[in-house]
Image (cartoon, rainbow, N blue to C red; front, side, top):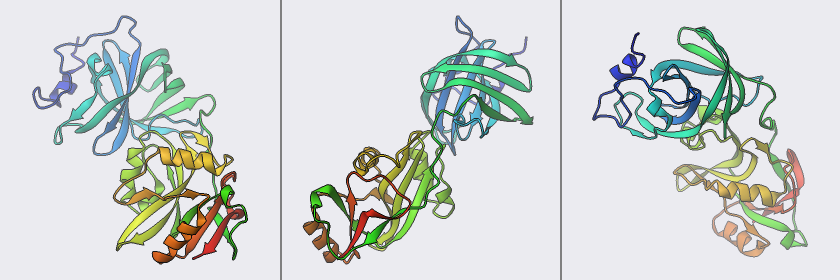
Length: 315
């Protein structure tokens, strides 16, 4: 019987990688374990591994498992991995095959509905990955993975940005508002899905931000500004988070969710906000030469286009 781990071993050298390199295949008592690993290698992807005949049959899935049955994801068939990979996590040294950090994203058991050379249909029973999936071969090592059944997350909102309404006088009840700087930059909505964002096409440095989200989905609202001669993206709202639309939630809920992301990087940050405190914010905007202040009602939902819930007050 051929050794199913020959290819795996040929790509790895003991002592140069922390990965397990067993002498022979093994198996679990039930023979139906699976693991999904988040792999920050040359490009972010997820590795789906299904136990089969003492090894883990593996696919690299660049965008992760599809959440919507209307969208299939690429799954590249790779070499079989040893069963010890069920719990493997750590840093594969740069320069080695698959170099980068790897963590266990989910693990559990699965049920086989069909298994052939061209089609694998399974039911995953994990904490984060559950439901029926089918992998089908398209060409060579390239397969596709399809979710069967209903979507497991809300669809992305297709919105225009919410815009403030100019106003000469501040609102009477300042305690009902949060006050933020009007930056005078260019508005940018940033959708993030599968560790990637379309916005990176114009701004390649956003790839790092998107990869930091891993499998977490999001739509961020912000503004491109130039501070100290450097381009910076300041975020001040969150429209979608981890599979759930937030546009109907009040500003306070969206703001708390945005701050929980702790978005701080060389090219991006979370914009400051001061509830119920207009005078010092307006003075700071004047001192910094900013156009003004935006007053945002604490109980307001996110509305596309001009809104009376957001007010622009000149410095």
